[in-house]
Image (cartoon, rainbow, N blue to C red):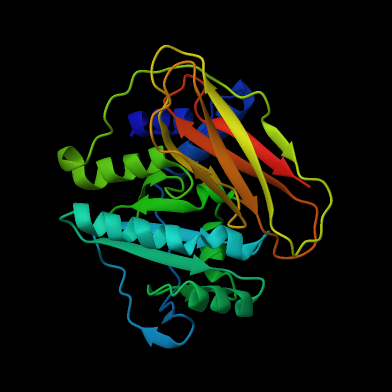
Length: 283
């Protein structure tokens, strides 16, 4: 358990000692803590058909989404669908995924569930009863948990937002059978512009831009994953390794849901010493 806490501190932040201490305190509070469930929670499919969803499995991945900020951006339903399919394909054990959403707008959640054709039961917790029982952290990165059969937390973190958290979850669930990341030689990456200002524009118009990553090290640069802080931001990039001395382009698209000032984060996980590389767009 101490190893998992140390691993998670390294996964989440390579930053100030103050922030590391905050994360260490949070992990010490939540690791091995029992998660309490509301009596007879109601799970539905796309907000319509009620289904039985008994909480019994040896391992459970719990995702709680609160009402703060952009709900549709935080749900990331298509990414969760891909993860569930992957876990089902590589794990011999039945892993239960439980989704509890506390929406500021039930209409918005139901629309998103139908639009993305999310075919997994979810609990629309309009009274936020799940959170009231447990008092989850306010940071969305720490509102997802891997639980054992006794509903105790064995790992914390969002596997959709961080591929190393996903790797840790699979290692715990599958043990020695977990697929291991091929060892990669580390290189050095340079990014001349880490923040892109898109300026003022009509919110109904999609905006595009790009970032350039240059491999200034001695080994090929491999981008493992790119994670955005919001579903309204997407990134396209070349998955082929970038040779030393060459550059690769990350093409960014932003489509607003409504008029607003925005500041979105793009996190690039790669085999660079400075990984993850943090980029941002604003306007």
